[in-house]
Structure formats: C-alpha cells, structure tokens
View 1 (cartoon, helix red, strand yellow):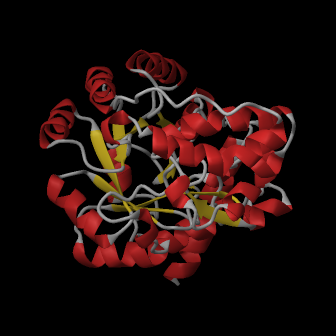
View 2 (tube, helix red, strand yellow):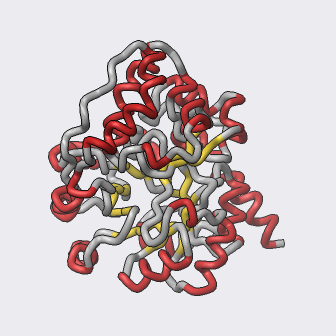
View 3 (cartoon, helix red, strand yellow):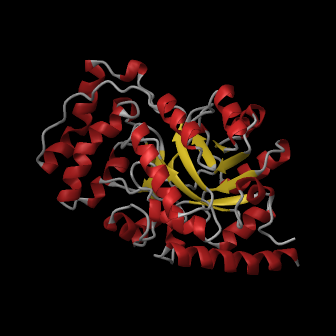
Length: 362
C-alpha cells in the first residue's frame, strides 16, 4: 500500500490525504481551493463570514473551477455575545483600553457594534442545498439532524477537536473524520468544550491521545508545512494532514501581499495566541497590541463584536503601514516556508512525503 491510500483519502474521494486549511475572514480563494483539489488534495474554503447568498456564489465558482472534491468550512458557534450585544459599560471599557491606538492612528473610536445575529443555521441550509463534497466545521458540532442530512446527501463531515474530550464527543456524534488541531496552528483555536486557553495540546501529542481512544480517522493539523511533517503525522497514526500557514503564504490565497510577505519574514519566528483582535483566542505573528494587552482580556469585547470594533483600527493601520498594530494570522511553523506557488508547494509535499515515508518504513 502506498502512503496516500488511507481511510481519509477514501472517505474524501481524493488521491492524496493532504487538506488545505480553510481560512475564514476573506483569506480563502477559489483559485487556491481549485489548485489544491486539482493536484489531488482537498482544497478548503472558510465561509463563516459569508452570507448564504455569498456561499452559493462561491460554491458555484469552485464547481466551475474544478470537478474534484473540495471542502466548505463553517463555524457552528459564531458568537460569544449574549443576545448579540454588550452593555454600554462593557463597551466603554473596551474604548478606554484601545483609545491610545486609535489616537496614535489619528482616527475616531467607532460606535458600539450593531447587534450580531448568528448566521450558522441559514448558512448550513445552503450547505445542504449546494451539497459540497465535504463540509467541515469548528467551534462545536451541528445538530444530529444536520449530520444525518449530510450523510443522506453524501456530504462527508469533518469536525475539529483541540482536546481528547472534544474528539470523543465528535465521534459519538457520528462525524466521518476528526481534525486534531494542535496549538502550533495559525488562526483561531476551535475549542468548544473547555476554554481555549486550557485546550493547548501540541499536534503530535493530541494525535496520539485521540488515536488511543477513538476509531474515527484523524487528520493532523498544526505545525505541518512540508512532506517531513506529513510523513511524521502518518507514522503516528493520522489518516491525513491539514496544512494551513504554508498555503496561506502562497500567491493563490486571498491574503494581502504584506501578510504573505510577513509570513516569509523574520517576524514570523515569533507568534502569539491572543484574543485582542477578535475576542477569540487565535495565533498570529506577534504584534505590539497583543504584547501590550496580555492579561487585559476583561476589557475586550466578545467575539465577533471585537472583530467589528478592531476592523476600523486595522483599516487605518493598513493605510498608514503600521504593521505592528495588525494581526497577521500564522502558525509556529512559518519560518520553514519555502514556496510561493500552491502547485509547487503541493508537488514538493508529495515528493518529500514519499521519500520520508519510505525512510520511516525501513
């Protein structure tokens, strides 16, 4: 058996068990998804910020760009704001905490964010209607009814776990595959049972813990950017590997030029887990704001109100090129990145995995 003939490849209908991490917040692109899928992996599109109509559009564009399997990703829990809002007092606290940064950029503090209404239910209806080959989700588990409908429609389901407990719950819900999301990964920590801060196990430890207790095939994610990492994950029992930061850094992703540049710069050696930019814990290149506001989380707004609040600051910081005030998502593995073209990255991963896997087998 070749290294790529795994349960995950079989379930997902792909040639190679390599998944491109689906990036939310407008960082995904149809071009990246189709490039990875055409190369035999599974391209992924993060759609949690999109309206149902926008998801339909994206899904059509992907289907036009490739006839290979692909993944659309949603967030089951897309708000931490009670009744979608915060008290005026809480908002005042956030204003005081962040005022120096707004002042430095010479912009006014924004108004209190509008009440946020969860979009997941409407978004998931579109998933069931459009029937992407793969539906992955994080921050929780869809209802038994939704999972049942996915199975009936032939949509493979993939849930994300940051702890063994979460993996056990995902297995009992009947998902097809479980992502073991290690704390090395860039982006948000998709914890849903305990606080994200207490759910920080490394990828390879988490993978082994899950393999010990769970029969559902596991996808290793976090700290993997090349064939060496893929071979190591497979050797520890993973059925696939998901790669985020390395694909985010390619020209085909929707990351800004400066974001991609930062991932290849010296700054990428230093990453931080912070809630300062969105209200949820996520890993990105260390920024001045994340450093300044350690232990001041009480003054942040809940997700996604903090994201809306900080959007004004991000726009001004971008225009003024104050890069140390912006969160550039990225994982701890960024310093080893080499490729700026997704097809070349994919080719290199496959060649290297073959070499290292043969070596490990010996």
